[in-house]
Structure formats: structure tokens, C-alpha cells
Image (cartoon, rainbow, N blue to C red; front, top):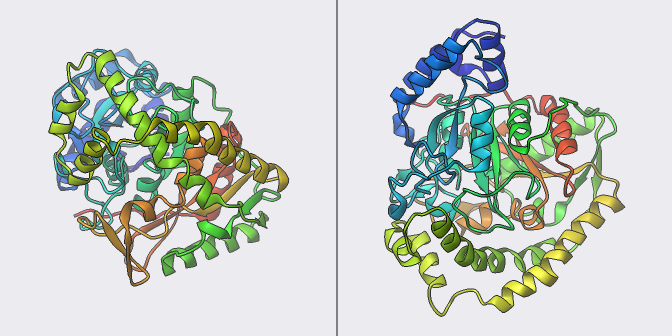
Length: 470
């Protein structure tokens, strides 16, 4: 496939066109730089180096290898992933301008496959939030409506990919941070089973919950990036839609939804049933309580162990006190400060979560999938579309003010704590033209099957809309 504007091509399409000689890496780079400069107001990126990017594209074109694997295509990597090329600031003051000595394994795998580093994506400070309203680096704006959040914490990557400023990118996800911004910007966001990709070289929150993940415009693009980062071939298989068994857990996942999100979910389920999918109405017992017992005890305790280790092992020369002093977003600074004092998460609570509660949550999921013979479960990725920038503490849902963070991650968080794979697919637009997404979660380790299922379902959703940023 070819396009008059290379920015409109997906990652797979751009690579195919370069292999076919329709354009060169430098042509793609120039088109993308122009697009980036035009949409600078989105504040999607923290760092760029257009001169270096042009030089690297010229070197690719001279080598004649453009279009091989990922060769010659730029990607946006979230600002908490070490690249050893551009700074890794994690959107926070103390790390501003710091360049890692070596790239994170996920970044290195992409670069070794020929990808170019196009930019680093703006984010919620230290990845501790879902709005990407960062007082250090500025708020990320949603290309569908610049008054709205792009989601977080990988909001910059999502905004940049949705606005066609980069063909695809890599975010990180602890509880929602790849899938949520993908849902709010009309993209595919894939969180793999924890451990599928190596996690070193990423500014951490929680080593048992964090994982990198692709943010892209199609499942095919996400599968290509997954194959490179996982170091395993992508066989390209697509599941048969007819006969797929998808669980529909109404309790928790379909409760208290925005009216348009609820209507979109029902329309999506109807379309799947029409296509031959078997929808299994079955709830996951006590899922809310099981998840609550794990989430914060694990994330907050591991943060206080994992971040100091990262700072030391990567030679930043920074202390936790300096990191706290450099935090500029009130929500992040307050949470960070609470863990530096007597309110810190006690180890006993962490041990209870890791030794008892998390295994119980994981067993509940495993039993649910097996007892119902499911390929995956399906539910709305978020209870509502994007909300206005500045609604950091509460947002409006069905006429009430509800907590922003807890509400937006309600559906994505349980799978995160269970360390199972999940993928959000764009499924429609609200009356105001804001994207909505539906998520598929699969059993632990079922990543290849889940991606094949997502590839099969993607045409049923038939989402072709794109934003028109000012």
C-alpha cells in the first residue's frame, strides 16, 4: 500500500513501502518532522534531535536496507525508557537532561532491528498517574480535543501516534498506562504478560507490575513490535472469529459506565455475536476486593525499593530526597512524600499482598478462564471517554464527581495485578468525537493467542476514524 502522505501509513505499511522503493527513510523522516512541528501544541514529546534523526535516515538509505524488520522507521519511546541517545527524565525535575549510559533491553532490541529513535514521549510525572497533566513538562493534549487529557501515564506516546507524528511507540504499563491512553486516543495498546520483555533500564514503580508495551494504530503493528521486544518470531496467525469464546464479566467491569461507553460496549458485543463469537456471561468472583488487596501495597512498597536501586545501578548520582525535591506535580509529590515518612507502606502489608492476596487473585483468573473455556474476557477499557485537563482529583461520571485515578483504572488494574496480558482496541466515538476502547484480557502467558484473537476481532470493530488536531 502507498499513500501520498507517508505519515498516514501504519508501521507495517511504511516498512512495506520502503522495501518496495516507493520512498526512502529520509522521505518518511521529513514528513514526520513537518507533522511534529505542526502539532507541537499537543506537547506529546519531551526530547527530539532532528539533525541526528536525519543523519541516521540518510545512513539507512545509503545502506540499501530500508524497510527490513524495522530499519529506517522512527519510534517514540516513553521518557522513562533508557535510550542512551536522548535524555531519560521520566517527566521529573531531578532527572532532566540525564542520558543513560546504555539503552534498556527493550530499546536496544528495537534499535538492533533497525528502528530509529524519533522522540521521547511526555508522560505523567514518574508514571504515577493517568492524566499526563505534568507540571514539570507540561500537560499532554489529546489530538481529538486539545482540552482533554490523552490519558496516562504514557500520554505523550499515545498523542504522538494518534496525531500521526510517529508511526508507533512504546509506553510502559503498571496498572493502565499503555491501554488507557490508547483507549482515549483511538489506538491499540498492548500490555504483555509481565516478564515477556526484559524490564531493566526503565525508571520503575514496581518490578512485579511494570512492563513496556506497544502503542500503535493496528494490531499488526503491535504484533511486530512485540515480536522484536520479546525476541521471538511473529507467525502472523489470525484466529477464527466464529467459535471464539469471550467472557463478559458484568460485575465490576460493566458497572457505573458513562452512558455512551455503555452503549458502545453493548453495540460491540452485538457485533461480535453477529460475527459468530460465543459470549459467555460470567462474573469473576470478588474481583474488586481481590484487586484492592494487591494494588497499592505492591506498587508503593516496591517503588521505595526499586527506584533507589535504579538510581544507583544507572549511575545517576541522585538520592531519593533529590528525586522528591525535583518532583513538580502536586499529586506525585504528595504520594512520594508520604512514602518517605511514617505513612510508608509497611513490609507486612506487602508480604500479605505478595504471599496471599496476589496468588489468590491469579488463581481466581486462572480458574475463571478454565471453568468457562475462554479465549479471553472483554470489557470497556475505561468507564468513560477522555475528561478535561485539570480534572486531576475528580471527574464527572453520570452527573457525579468521582475520583479520577481510581475510576479510570478500575477495569485495567485487576489484570495488571494478576500480571496477565491485555490489549485495548478502539471501538467507537462518543457524540463529542472522543474515542472509546474495548479491552481483551487473556490467561497468563497466552500472549501469542491473545494477539491472534485481537487481530481477528479488529475488523469487526472496524474503527477507521482519525483525529484532526488543530
